[in-house]
Image (cartoon, rainbow, N blue to C red; front, side, top):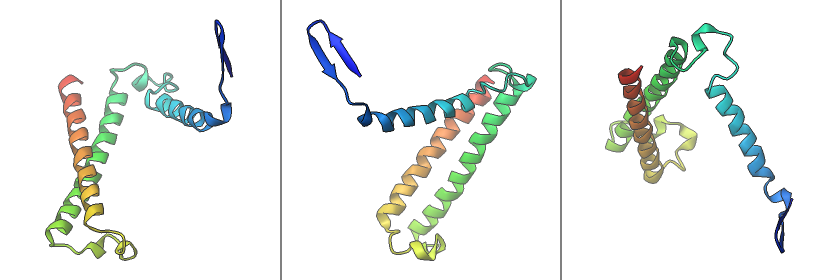
Length: 126
């Protein structure tokens, strides 16, 4: 790509932007799925306020919340010392240290708070 400003010419090599272009294409296709763009033939998904969209998104949020609640509970029990770290997986024992458990615990709490907020938003507005 060559960009020309009055007297300045900038040449940008495309190979450097190829990974970003591929990532952008993948994100666009994911966004298309999440926006239900190809589901307009079904009456449950024809607009933003139909029960099909609300129920499907609420189900995905609740499933994500449930998985992370179980993960958080398991990690808390490992952290307190009630459960052994080998219950995660015997082969992972060599690299599952306190820092990895802390990071996973923080991630699970973040996702729990995020899903709780969005489910609460659903129940108040939907």
